Image (cartoon, rainbow, N blue to C red; front, side, top):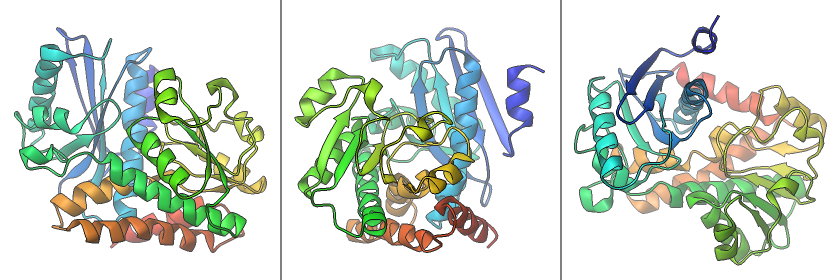
Length: 341
């Protein structure tokens, strides 16, 4: 059985759409894990992969996470995710043309999937995609969209970390040592919000310029997992918690913005056994979903959105109330209840 076959037959989603663009040597994968009223939504990730199968695997995993996020946010939309597996990140006119072709691909699905920004895509990219399809969220404000999801995602994660620290440590953020791994659009904002709240913030990123720009104490990327801290906040790529690294963590809380933080689901139970509180990633990082759907689908204003973002901390505290098992189990039960409505 090929890797493609193994990935697809082992997935519990509804549909995968695939297109290969010969001129740009780019694989386009759209995973539709679930639908509500015939539609799904989720971001578009653009990245360089060692093999196209890795891009497909990302699309499948991330679309399943989007199903959970939509349920957590109580939004009437299914979960989807797209991956553009590129040989290198395009710029200029090449990027515009590739995104136009991708927009036409989305349009060919007749509303089954609507996209939004994700890793290496921005609201400006959504403007470009929107020149070829109406099925796009979070275009720039100038183009009638709600703009970048990053600021509100960071705010949601901040409230989630504050609630997690309250539960696990019985204190506020003042003096709490937080290690933020990944200083992208979300991680950089989160680091400064935590610092402003009095936390002792350490940062790490493979991009030395981002670290320098933060002005915060740095940890070598190779030393992140073994660094002693109160909160480990993964905000870069997923899968940083593996069967090996879970034993090396020296923290009390894992709570960050990254998707699919656990390399396998059973690691949630191992974290619980070790006395490490884990904030389910699809709960704590769902601020981007609240931003896009709240402002563009539900007609919220910013104060209503801010209230929903604060509510992510309250949701986590409710999940933490069942101290006898990992919060992931309570989160999955919440998702199941809301999807059954």
